[in-house]
Length: 195
Image 1 (tube, rainbow, N blue to C red):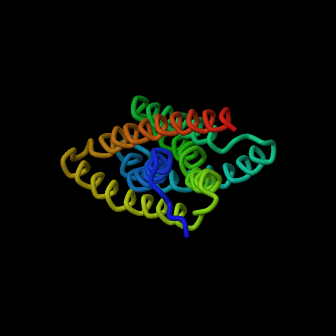
Image 2 (image 1 turned 60 degrees about the horizontal axis):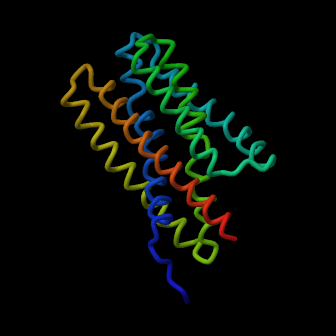
């Protein structure tokens, strides 16, 4: 059997598995501390808003895909919206921003974005669906361990301001994901033009 070769596109897809997971994992692990820091009386409500955002996104994504929107386009727009949301939460230090942020990060960061990365990977590597899916999901697992550990370190170093440092880290990784998705989109366009 032909083996999967690591190409720039496959590496980008693997890295997208890492970055898209990081966006929502870091939020899940710091939103309650951030809520406390911003004066939210019941920080656990942020998690409820996050869950609502995920559910809404699943329905919206299904509708978008049925209308023929390419998943790679969503991989640009959703992380970009998540980045803007994270920036707003960082600069507007109000309790309501943690709740709104929970909803927006749930929608744009967690609502099926990783599944869309897997869908694009399967489309681009149809002969190696199982292998590429496994590698992307391993990258997601590595993100879970590595970035949550780094967030814990930032929280210890930053003290009371630690959750805001985690927001900055999240913004940086999400920005990298947007740049990767833009490059992936360009690769897909080139491949389509050559066919």
